[in-house]
Image (cartoon, rainbow, N blue to C red; front, side, top):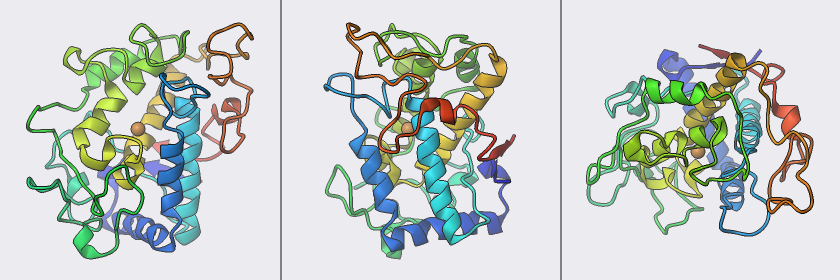
Length: 288
Ligand SMILES: [Cu+2]
């Protein structure tokens, strides 16, 4: 059984094996596929057409499938590897071992945001950025955004989102009045100063490549989204009678018809249905 562990509990061997598998995926050219796919599906409310990865109910099932395919690709390289998760309500500082030189490496330097330590530093020669929204060939971070500081979400903020009993609500997008668990966790409901803004705020807190469409360029993306996935598991446990919404395809005259995927409609690019992703247990378990 594949067991995903809290990154803080990994042994140094497990950390190294994860890093080496990621670097090998990069060397083989297959890592880029994940960056490209994420960027391609980074559609927003303002665009026309389908929203699948973000600003939509499929935020959770789409990323579950995305992380799972990535994990399987790593396992073709090293079958012992699973994607660890980063509980940012606990490991909420730049001094966390997450950012050490044998794992994710540290913050970007002041002058250009370039990550200078760890396996993903450009100077190591193993982590060139080849697909990004900027021209930088090196990985960048700006942890905590010191010019306009932000903090990671707290446990109380996470618990507030987990308490919401409704998965999602019409109009199924990022509008601040789209209440429900999905939009609160994804992070569009409340401004950062008011304490909402959960998943999005973590991307902002890391900064650099973690902001925006090409965010999987930073390998911490996977640890963040593994925790987002675990949050969905916890929500399902807390609300066993609540399910994914919309449960059925939207009516043809609904303004969101054709833009939102219901439980049994296929999600591109894999044509997997959200309902096939509701239960994580056939694929992996979490050590909590
Ligand atoms: Cu994300």
